[in-house]
Length: 284
Image (cartoon, rainbow, N blue to C red):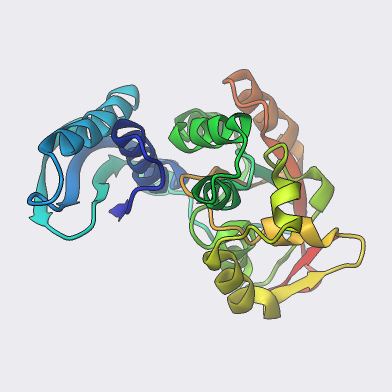
């Protein structure tokens, strides 16, 4: 189950993004979502019911795209809008993909560009250009279904997580914390939204980025060759972000090709898994 407050002004678009975000947890497990329940908080005495109608239509748009059946839901009267889904999916017990299990030598694939938190902050400040807003919304509303299906067709996938509120490095940290492996991230290979650098260098950053960095910095070894602005983006809290996949080196190119062929050109190999620096992440 996952739900949150609006991050865009258009109700239907918000519904689409919130539903895609909730479905990502199931896709990250290598599972197929089947049914969903709407979770809604709405200030019925302060807002027109048509806004709720459009939010739910947006969620239904995404569920239809995912071939997920809406079977009901629950609503409460609240001072602030919140929307999301409780999702049920299926996967064979022997094929569950967890966020732990990456092996030395694995390659790390990220399927969506980073920067939605920074883009949303710039939008709230009326500073974001239209191209950045459109790219961010398109990415957040996109399902991780295609990437999950590509994973299912590829042998050697050892671990996966979806990148959301803890940021890229925060969720990567969960994959190595107290474990027997470490990650090496090539900062220059990480896909980012075009134009995001300007806002980072102006300090247009969400509060969650600072919290993510403070919480996980002890696990990081950020080398001087990593530009400071990129290091900031790696902690940016994402909404409906992509999948981070650890896959055997011999299968990495095949998996990346399958993802690209399914219409996700931004996906990239961004690092690898090592026995060195166990429980840590090196960024260079």
